[in-house]
Amino acid sequence: MKIPPSFFTYFSAISVNFLSYGGGLGYGWSSPALPKLSGEVDPDQNQLSRPATLAEQSWIASLLSLGAMCSPFLCEYVSGKLGRKISLLLFSLPMIGGYVILIFADEVVHFYIGRFLIGITEGSIFSTIPVYSAEISENHNRGTIGAIMFLFVSLGHFTSSVVGPNVSLQLFSIISLVPCIIFFVSFGLFSPETPYYYVIRNKFPEAEKSLKQLRKKEDVSEEMSEIIKCVTEMKSNKNISVLKEIFTDKSSLKAFVLSLLLMLFQQFTGLIYIIDYNQKIFDSAETPLSGDKGVVIVMAVQVAAILFSTNVIDKINRKTLLLLSLTSIFFLHTTLGSFFYLKQENFNVQYASWIPIACLMLFITAYQLGICPISYIFPAEILKPNVKSFGIMLVCCIGLLAEFLIATFLPVLEEHVGFYVPFWIFAVISLIAIVFVYFFIPETRSKSFLEIQESLEHKIK
Image (cartoon, rainbow, N blue to C red; front, side, top):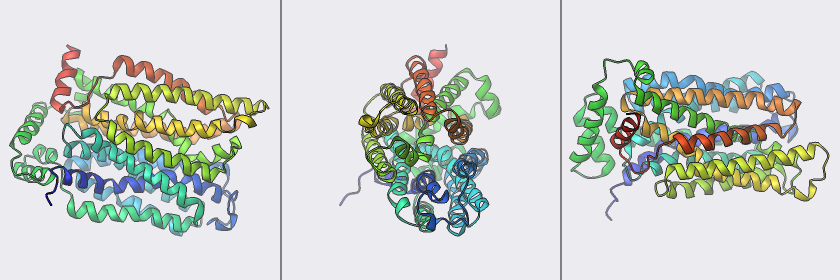
């Protein structure tokens, strides 16, 4: 049987994203784990000798984001010097170590350390895997290849929602470790370095070999020429530091600002808050479903939404998907916030207790169909090759800082002001994002890297 030409490209994209699967488990870990650590659920399964306080729970949840914020700087340096592949293999080790610590943790500080280490790898996932995926893909499948990361992250969320409430924390941590091991073996042994990295390092025979392996064909001269042309243009500015070029070159600055703002708007749609406190949201709303069952349904919808997204992201304009996604999120957060406001003011909302279920299901669908995958794909498409790695790292770091602040302080705000406040904050920011996308985000679907750069420079002139 003849192997399809794109088979190995997809194999490499899938093997690298087993690390994303482990990352998704890391993000989803808080929802089933925190109720157990607090003693609210299955107190006999608490690895701690006492219930964790609200402040300790908040730090256990948010330290992952803090760790994720720290790693992209070093990851970008290693990725530029040793390659995308070696960088990802090295930065998978903290996550492996973090899960091992969680398996044996019996003090709050152990959970702090384990979550922080897992976060270090999370930072490398979101800063380096989009670069790797973009550099092994072709123009016609770049969006689909990029969206695989979000499919695997969501599979991690789903697994945590199904498995987490039904097993001990120790066993859950062991299960979370498995995808990381699969990644290390399959990606380490069988997937190539990207041809772009080899061309940047003037290793043309290795670049051609990598391209032949990815495309499963002997004649790759046309694509090699395009890669060399793109990298040559980058190297014409090699005497300018990356940081200086980002902030002095008009097209690079515009690409960076657009990428950063899109990433910040994505963070402030509120996914990290909903993932961390999904079970609490269902319990607080007093829905017909128990919190753990509600989480399973929402996570299942997320997987289905991403499966659909991988099929449409290269068929519908990025801008259209963004506007549909953000508009839906605005109305859903407004509705969800209003529900909790009325409930807090002692209105009878029992007849409408289905609203939070519907809102969360629709939110996760809208999020995964637009703003989530595109906010990570967009920087890899629009940034120039010579600033791409550093630019994505910077965008991810600032985005992860925003995520850390959301995960740390919004639960405190909710505790002191009201459960409705975070949702109304997310709604207002989503409305601003709609205006931003409509007026400023350029279309990148089905365009080569060179075409995108030429279009961006033409608009500046």
